[in-house]
Length: 365
Figure 1 (cartoon, one colour):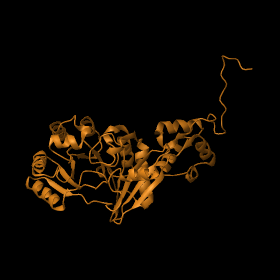
Figure 2 (cartoon, one colour):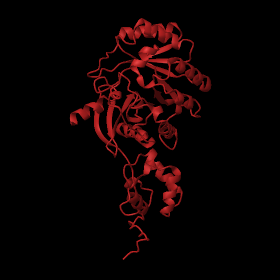
Figure 3 (cartoon, helix red, strand yellow):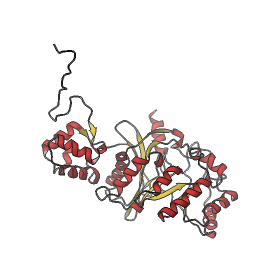
Figure 4 (spheres, one colour):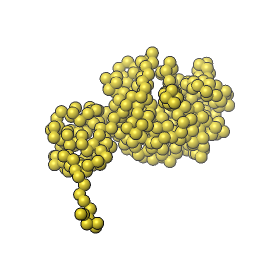
């Protein structure tokens, strides 16, 4: 009989891990953690670089794929670790070539991402959170609230999934899907750096864009990062009352404060930010709204990206007319501000952010 003051050693599997211990997601390990794991397994450090190449460049989905690793190491890793990965819960194809995905992670949480081909380029729109807590009035994702933030590897995996589905290199990424990237800052930056790294996706920093609703402390922090990542700010109105109604999640930061911090951002980085402006009929497309937008952007280094609002079933908001969008472009140009109307992709599928997830969940109820 065992003494009450002693503890028994846990049974171990042939790979050396405690019997019944949860397996770790290999993609969630840092380089040092991976080296430490390999040391436990009696493997040389150079194996870490081989494994990371399989994870981040080749996007391996099974340990058996890692052909330059000894079979004994592959077996030991499979006993101790998983490769994470995603399950496709839904996939939609647009007539313009875009593909929208609802991807589900191991814990059942799902997020949306989109692949948008154009000539020899492939752009990806990825999510940084499952759901969103910012509660923007016109956003399908905001209506469902925040489930949780994503890890850096979960953000990265969306891009790799799209790459593999199209079987072509991703040339640009916008973190403009579900969630507020700057409310998940550390994971967002880690994912951006992995996407930028030649030991990852190898995408140029200026082709990696973060879209924020205007979380001012994080904009200030972002301006001090060494990489030349691109910043987009969801403005949607330069009238405080209208913006507070449309974007309650950032109402504690005034437009004046946003104006000042964006001036600091430009001075610090020398980079031109983009202001995103979803044109909503009768709400932010009036003469007063247009005049306020011109005043906000005048004499600033900025580009305005005018967005035709995606119609969401049950929403009280409707898109502005093409003629009104054209008038915005002309008026902004008259005060020296470059503006473009974003080409709407995937209009024949669930194009609005969060719309596919809502429809799938509704059909499963």
